[in-house]
Length: 403
Image (cartoon, rainbow, N blue to C red):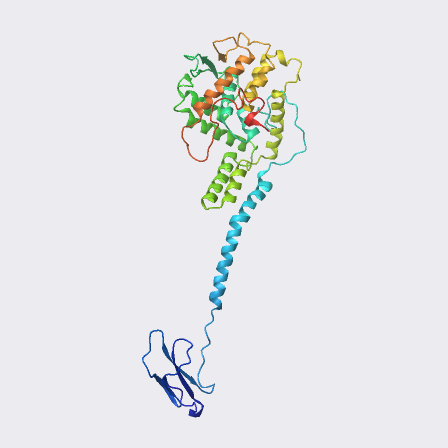
């Protein structure tokens, strides 16, 4: 090695070392004024020759030792970000779902009691009747097959079609119901979901039956349910489509489960059902609907003429079907028979309120069967699986329609 010429020779000191790292062995020649050295024996693998040269400072430029701190700082930052991400995803995210529910998922609170309602609920803005399908969707935030059954019965009572019960062959044979389209004599306008329902039932035909609908009605029934959701959002009862809101949260929960975030996934899926939010108008309408359900499900006599009034029984029957309390509602009218001029329903047995309610139970089961898809038609849609109201009959006071 060589040094600048201005380095005094007397200040130069050299030494040499041999062996493995850290060895003090000096089996080498060098030192003194010579700026070099050589090993005096063959070096084995892992051994080396080290020459040390010392001189007075100030004659050469010293390159600062490279620090490992920037690399260490980068590693520490990466580790901190990973830890923060884990805490955010596995701890903060599940808690955020709960916070979002309390801030955005709960319905507005109003200081009011459930009123006594003896008639169909009305829209507070338009004063139009809230249909049985809409009321059934509002009360549990879900458009289901009970709401479709209730809508069919309501359309029949209003004169848009007739329902005929066909006697099955054999004790265990499934009942079949035949529908015949009619030109209504009244002027009651049809809501979008009602128009879709009539088109799904009949198309261009004038007669159809539950048996013939098995291959086509399931997919159409989802369109009817979607229409119910859209109508309630457009009317200002819901801030957003409840079905869409639930599906979004279920999707988030499934993504979380696939990423092994079990707490987040479980919380998101559980809270998905409660995330749909009613508006203030929707909450007020719900109190009226609850009042009507309370009247329909109560065994106490609240109107002097009610137990002798077939018109009242018939008028509110679709709402009782939608709420799952039709059998209880019918028991209040057990003493009266159907009028001779009843045109919307035709059966093969003596008809009174109780037998009609029992028939409507079978009817609801049939509609639930044909309206339930055998495979998914997209999204996370889930409908009632058919088969009557839960708990037997029409639910014995609510079933899945509890509030």
